[in-house]
Amino acid sequence: MEEPTHSLPALFKQLGLPSGPADIEKFVTTHSPLKPDLKLADACFWTDSQADFLRKEIHGDADWAEVVDQLNLMLHGKPITGKQN
Image 1 (cartoon, rainbow, N blue to C red):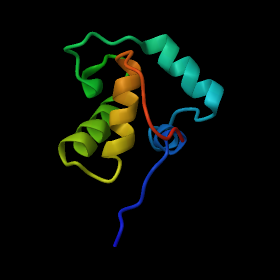
Image 2: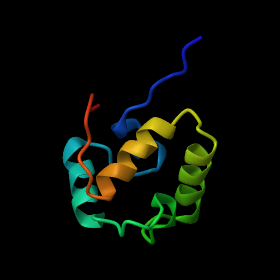
Image 3: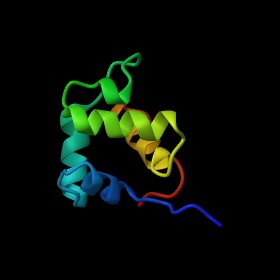
Image 4: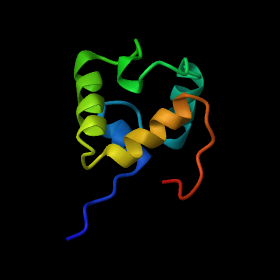
């Protein structure tokens, strides 16, 4: 059975954030670039529950890991290649 694939807007909804294309662009513009050595979940703008969710998903290579990694790359100012959701 294939695991579900989540989109970037779905991740923003999961985190309780506005999830429209302009909202996501504004969030990334406002909060990037993160310092190269700063882990995504350790950024100061997350609530405790958001940070815990991000940590759990990335460390567990869980269902949301791919899109969390996409957001990580975006916030670190690295270009994203491949399909954009």
